[in-house]
Length: 305
Image 1 (cartoon, rainbow, N blue to C red):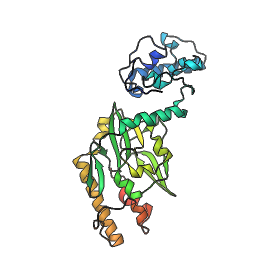
Image 2 (image 1 turned 30 degrees about the horizontal axis):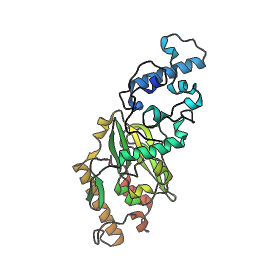
Image 3 (image 1 turned 45 degrees about the horizontal axis):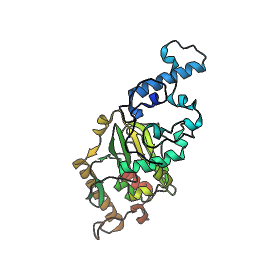
Image 4 (image 1 turned 120 degrees about the horizontal axis):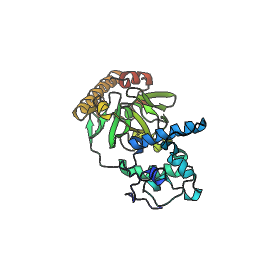
């Protein structure tokens, strides 16, 4: 099956399904922030509720149905996969009745297609032994976001948190479509019996959860800024939320300050100067048997907002 980098058609999904007669797509199929899609979804939901209550349609819009429902009326072999509708692959029938979340092909496709969106040249700076990438926004709660375009951001934890707590073995993440609020719980990472919950630095709707870290949370420690991203969010009020985040010089100063506090803490607890002999170990918690998980969380990962 051939993957395409450009779409042969810019017809809206609602048009391709035959629900509306003429509607081009101007959002590159980022339907979640499309006003037309939002309006059609609202109308179709109202129509569905009216039909369930056996109420007669009173307006022209009552004939509208969800584009997925219209396509489900077609023979199975002729139902197009959503990735074909978006012009990314040759024709492939949809065997899951448009329940993409349960589709193995959709997961495979997302893994393969979205790698190219994130594997790009990223410049890193070393700040007191910790990596800080250029172009990323940092939060006081040690999460980061990267702008992906169209109001979408990717989100993960920074190198400080990853190295402080070491290798994770569990991840509890929200489902796609869930709304997260800035300063409220976003996801929980675990190591053995220990757990730590990170707050979302921005408000938005979850559009994707990294399938690789769901399967293998230990991947976060090795590459927290690239392969180890955790969520993507669509953020309708992103400009406002960015005001509470750190960027470039402010992020560098913040990382230098917390790194300095950690160095001082380790010197006091171990009697060894952390700066002597080079960088800190990648698993700080695992190298400090007399320091508890709760102590590290309270000192370094409690919200500073």
